[in-house]
Image (tube, rainbow, N blue to C red; front, top):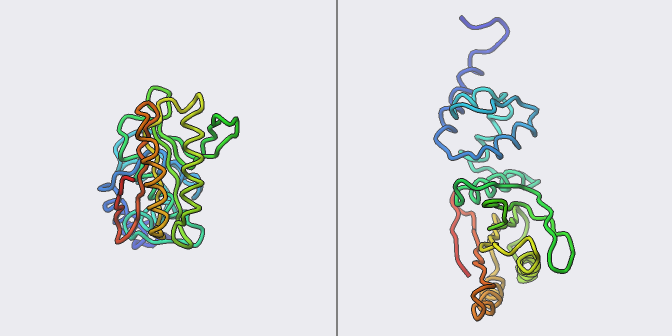
Length: 210
């Protein structure tokens, strides 16, 4: 029996969203971020379908737009959620933090959109360009400089991966520049860093190691 005043299609639609979303690898921290954005409840533990079912309509609809329909929004938040989930999927049993402030060797505090820790040490950092023009040479040079500063600081000794994601593509000269900067490090094995670009197109990320 359907409760009075509660449309039956609402139940069906939410059930459909849960059925679709439970097949996706949705990291806990992304569910938490979406729940917070949508003022939704979220079961702390349990099966993924139970946790999804505990979320409100707005949160489920947002998750469906982001991960199933791969929609974009003007603010670039949808693309950011996808990038966070993508980075997280590469590092199992690691701690993932977002909007982390990490000091570099220069003593400057760098705000890192997503960072991965293993045994309390940073092993990967990620930046993302969710919208706007294609990633430029200037964008990747700044990315390299920030990562290099973090790597050379006391918190970056275990840092091995640096990923730059984009939903707007990359300019050819930008990729050439990052590859050139990356190759300059190869002479020093202790200072090695894997620079990767991840281009989101046709619903998937294509990764290139520079």
